[in-house]
Length: 185
Length: 241
Image (spheres, rainbow over the protein chains, first blue to last red):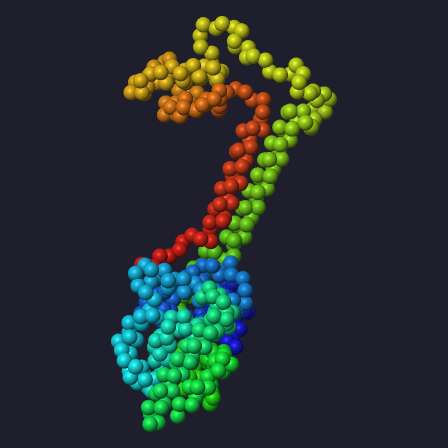
């Protein structure tokens, strides 16, 4: 699984700055990518707010590395919802403005899939999924949460999250299959 | 061809979801059973790109500030503070309780061992105030105001038309009522209270129950830090612009 952060978290709770850097480097990329799908271009701002709250509440945190990932992502998700509410917007995951312009037609989606899959392209493809599927895939595959932890973040049963992630992967697989079929044919 | 799109079972999906994040840092793991999909997930979970960590130093600054402010001393201090307050409140209750118990004869007073505890039905009930026996021409000291006097003055005050009441309190006739209320602004409230205790409680010279005033005084400091402590983790929520 993902690297275990338990000892780094313990050290950071005692004020160890290097340990905090280790945690930040392990979590920030995935967090930012997840937030990018939720709030689009404001992801960096929301991530900063998330870390402010994390460092403030770290002395009160209790749990292991997986628990810490879950805690951080939950804060990030709540911040995103606040942000979207504040700006009267729907989650970017259902209306990814940038992605929508890029993928107005399914041909464009396939074109995107055909490109050498950069991280941004991969995220843009995941962002075309229905919101519950996109979030489930991101929490599992990008943040590195297990099904139970992802379910806690989303406030759902783990079975529902497993199913959503599975459906999301099937959809992505279809898009990729169509792409490879069109290149083959 | 398109054969792989039909073969994504749940087990494979679970394996892909678990494998994507663990491949971070070691590069994409090529999965021949579901190649393109595994590549997609590996790309989504690829190692950090430089711009994704560009705010690291800001986060560390925030961490440093939080460490300086909050870790771990205030937590300890707050706990100690709460503990001390609880101890003080307990002590106040204990002392007040002992004083009350000994004054009412429930237990003997600790330092007057030879005093015989008397049942409350005997002649120790306080009689009428001695001031009533002497017909003094001058008004009694302001501390000796009685319930009857307060009620009488309040009645007189309330009989005035409401627009005259404010001016009436300036007259010497109501001086003792104003003193009893602790200021002209408190008179309407005190006189509005129903019952024989109609205000002036703080001015009554009756000190036969010393535990009575100490009780609410002790309860208040116990509540204040408790609510402050309970609210602490919720404060300072930075607002999204």
